[in-house]
Length: 99
Image (cartoon, rainbow, N blue to C red):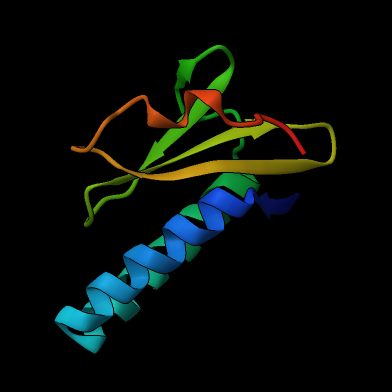
């Protein structure tokens, strides 16, 4: 299944990766690898993650305090947000939820 990031989610991912890379390049690489692993799980089992709200699903990252919020579309997964779990939890609600 194809994955598409919203512009906001792509920016959030890049910002988090930059933040962790500034701490240590290995930490930034670990964050990027965990997101890639999460995307692979989503491609294989798109409906396995619980619904956060209004049909939007969430997948929690294991090593980092982030969650990926996404919608399952007929031909793709649409990543709405790559959200820090401890900051303004519902900030993404006004975003477009499908491509």
